[in-house]
Amino acid sequence: MTHRQQVLILYLANSALDSRVVSWARYDGTGQHEHLPGDSAEPPYASGLAALRDGWRLLQMSQLNPPAPGGEFTVSYQRYEFLFEKWAPVPDGDPAPATGRG
Amino acid sequence: MQNTPELLSTREVAQFAARGFLRFDGLVGAEQNERFLHEFAAGLAGPKPAGTPLGECYAPGSSIARLLALPRVQGALHSLLGPGPIFDHHFFHVLDGRPSRPQALHQDSTIDTRTAFDVQLFYYPQEVTQDMGGTRFVPGSHLRLVNEASIARYQNVLGQQHLVCPAGTVLLFHHGLWHGGGHNRSGKRRVLFKLRVQPSVPQHRHWDTSDLGPATLDPQPIFVPGVWDENDVQSILCSSEPWYEDDTKRLEYINRIQLWRYLLGDARADAHYWSTRVENEPRRAGG
Image (cartoon, rainbow over all chains, first blue to last red):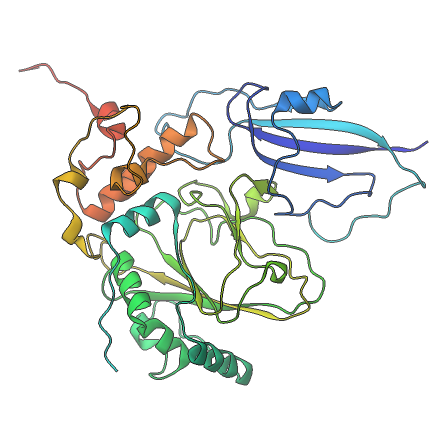
């Protein structure tokens, strides 16, 4: 059976994997679900740890780097990004190629 | 017709500094909304060049000139920008109701390191229902230094708002506020008029400052359990958003205080001591 990658990106409240989710994004390589900007008001998991317990594999987490000199108070991108994946079966062969952006 | 501008209060300006937007539901009357839509359908005059004084951009009596002359609109723009604002551009965002994808989250223009700020006016001449794809925006995102669509990966942010509003609603955004067009599934056309305006003078104390005083400006006891007045200006400036990281929210307060200092024209102003604390560098006498 063919498998495709599903990606989950969680942004957490601090560097701990069990801290609360503040932002999220999902991409589904199987083509079974389309996740769009602004499509949900509640996060899929309460924390990164809850995603692990549901079978998501952690691929990467943000490093803790000291602030750049002069930029100590700058606010910018969300700091605590955690990238997860699952491999999921594709029921009827290859998914249709995605169209459009995102 | 000469209208007396309705200036913003200190509390409203503090809310703008803290959250990056102000919202006025149903501000424009039904007749004026209809007239705007009629003029839009008939074809409005092309825009003036960027940099033109705003007061020279729209023919007297036109629906856009009438919008800008409304006491609340005139007063809010004056409060935030001061006299003599400059036209940047306007644009009509039209979602025709055919199947579409929502726009990814973005910050308009490009990296902008100013403390001075532009105001983006959003005017919705029609009622916007949930299925019409009202603007999605993230309160409190305006001071984050990012570059336009680089934030498209943030599909959903805790506390994001989808605009649902009565006809005639006006939003005022700080230029940095993260936003994106929604997903119009209604089959109805949705029209949004957006206008970006710049200041021509320092944006110091152009609002109704009659309520500014020691209670607003002086240091207060902090970290006192059970004491939190949501109407207090310093508390407004130090209120978090649900999506802020535990640590970064304190940096947000410091950045808001920087903006507040600019608005007050007072380099020592503070809120709940967040900036004064980290600026305290005692010097040795005679050293």
